[in-house]
Image 1 (spheres, helix red, strand yellow):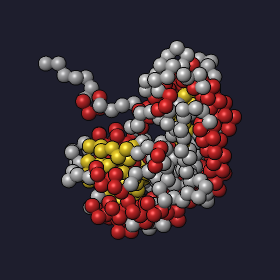
Image 2 (image 1 turned 135 degrees about the horizontal axis):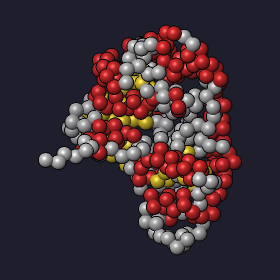
Image 3 (image 1 turned 90 degrees about the horizontal axis):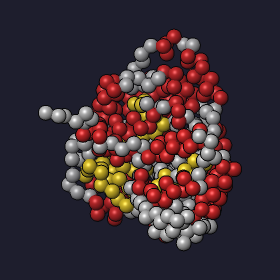
Image 4 (image 1 turned 180 degrees about the horizontal axis):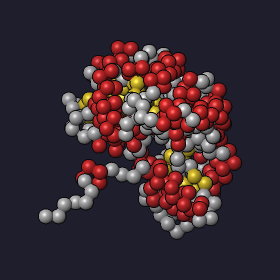
Length: 401
């Protein structure tokens, strides 16, 4: 009897599309091609010096050469609780915090802890590429609530209600959004939170872009907007985006104590504690002020306005104004089926591949985010590269007929 070499469970997982695009772009650069990458969602700023220095000091501390509690350093868990109260008004104690190896581990552990096989999760599309795989690994069933550019990629309560079944257990709520940059108003957040409460659902809310909002937009946590939800809400967050710490791999999960205890048990077998040095760096980050993110936000806002203006000047491209995170999500549906340099792409995935080859611009097609016909472009890159990259894109797409 021949058995498969790889389990069906793991075989069903797709590679991260954003990391795949970024990897291909870097490989082309290494081969000497001047590729400009809009793929990875990674700030182009270094981690602030005071955070790096905290890590250097931690390296010299013998305490951090040993195992520490699987759920996180006690002082970091308390600092995260304090930071959460400061930034979103949600009061929790340290026992409600689990420190994870980046935000992705927090995402997986949240769904693994909450879902049994067959439980349904409402997911607003476009969605970040990791959510479907985490839900699938946990045995859950993803139910898409599809939005588009006509509503600024915002889902209504009516849309959510249409997808509700007796098997629905969790609503995944993300604002500001990756990949669209959509931000729900405080009133919309409260309305959706009250709907979920009324339906007896859990809410898993990813708040990692909480500090990256622009113009008149305001971040609002559903945990604060609807206090009655506190026993049925799990908050995901981390230091990666706010403090330019993507490579440090420190995230966290906040929730009711029974959920956090169960997720901590899982982590104790999966990875044990997060690197102590990275935790010390994260402690310095969340305990400090927000001046570092303020400077980054100013740069991102400038780039946001530039990229939206330039994209909307390209015939066939429609790009709503993103109000948060650092992504633009333009529709390119009007360009599909048109001929460009002897080729006629029928999908945004095919068009993205041609753009990388011909224009040497790397971006992620909408297929990766559950909505074909779109591109995601991260504007977390230098101003000059941004202008050059979109200019190349405009020149190339301008040839479509």
